[in-house]
Amino acid sequence: MSRLFRQAHGEFLDRHERFDPQLELSLSFLPNQRVADEPGDFDLLRYDFDIETPLIITTEAYLLFGLYHYGRSYSASSAFGTANNTASINAEGSFGDETLTAAGARLGLGWFLNENLLMEIQTNPGVYSDLENSLGHKDYDFPSSALFTYRAIDNFFFKFGARYSQVYEDAPWLPYLGFSWEMAEGLRLDLLAPEFIELSFWPTASTSFAFGAEVTGAQYRMHSTLFTGKQEANLQVQEVISYIGVTHRFSDSLSLQARGGIVLAGDYDLTTGAEQSTNLANRFDRVEGALDQGFYADITFGINW
Picture (cartoon, rainbow, N blue to C red):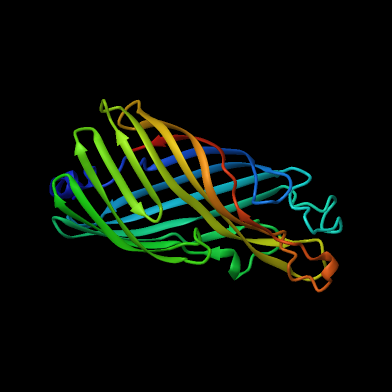
């Protein structure tokens, strides 16, 4: 079955998107980040695990299964979050250090409606939380997408569809629109608005250089243990990153990617989860505003099978 599927659609699948390992282990570092006019700053360490693998079910379709874990570790200076807040919020009246987790499963279906049109439907249910106290229904989310890829000519793939996620706080439902274009041998441009754009050059089959931009983020549920009763609220993070990077494939199975760049912008709405306190003196004034520009770097280890 797999051999027949590859005979029919292998070239389409090899060319319709940029290189994407089936298993990815990555670390990202964003030091000395600041939010609008908020005093102080924070360092962000992201540690991610992502795995997905297809299961061929017919010569025209496959199922997709996977798991993901995205961790965000914030280390804030003592001044960060102190504006308009009192020391009763925590020991110093600041936002403090926090760890956020997004973890869940990937489930999807890919179906070739004809030899030039692929439909991909995917949902990624999981928990998005600080994992403190017991979890409620607001600690869970289900980022999902439906994407159609049409091969107009051998080297140009047009893409359209829709997606749901909390990357954009005020617009969780947005359309997908983009393309993948092999402009010349080894040179390609991939765009999928509103998430990423990348220009990549493969001078050899094993090494590529890339320049691009992407938007990352999510909404997490925060819980406070500082007060009696259940105190919780939503925390929103978003980063807009521009990068240059290099990818090297040591073999068909192993790859390594390194990127460095700039945090161009972002949208942060931070909370300790104490917004619902009935005591106004104990309420945490939200850290809300755009990210200042700053440094970004990541490294990703990939495995294919």
